[in-house]
Image 1 (spheres, rainbow, N blue to C red):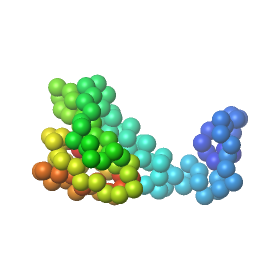
Image 2: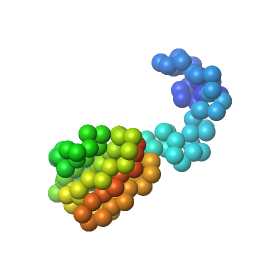
Image 3: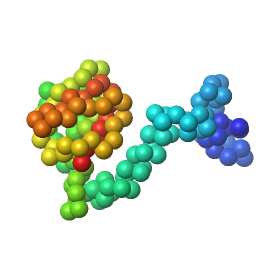
Length: 130
């Protein structure tokens, strides 16, 4: 398929089509549950499902001072809240769970281990908790 399926054939893509476009294209991305294409689809679905991700107040949580590669924030709305925890680091990180969120809604990468007092985050992973 022209342009590897990322744009119509009569449109010039803003980035060049790579030589591996037969392996990396829209059709193969659609068939791979862990692909970037399907990850973005799931993130958009989560945003539509959770009003807190659309309109909620943003609070950066600082319980990760010992882990500079970890980002934790909460989006709060009167209807509910969602916590987002991302480990950009090379190693697993154990952070204190003061998020008030216990249930993992979606994970990117390996699954987190959520306990009442702590959350263990695998390297290069992101987690949505409610």
